[in-house]
Length: 91
Image (cartoon, rainbow, N blue to C red):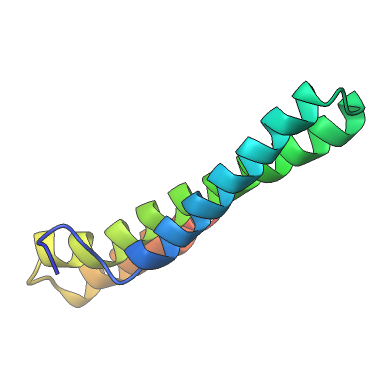
C-alpha cells in the first residue's frame, strides 16, 4: 500500500463510485422531467453517501495517523486521545 493508503480506502472508493452512479441517475431524472420530490430524494441519497465516505476517511485518519504522530504517550494522554476519537464520531 502507498504511504497514505489505509484499509478503509477501498470501501471509500466503492461508496464514491456508488454515489457517482446515483448522481448520473439524478442527471437523467432531471433530463427525463421526473418530479422534483423524486429528484430531491435521490440528491439527498448522493449527499449522504459522500458525507459517509468523508466521515470514514476522517475517522480512519484520526484512528491511525494521530496515534503514530504522538507516540509514545502517558496513560493520561492516551485517555484524552481515546475521548477525542470517541467524540469525533458524532460529527
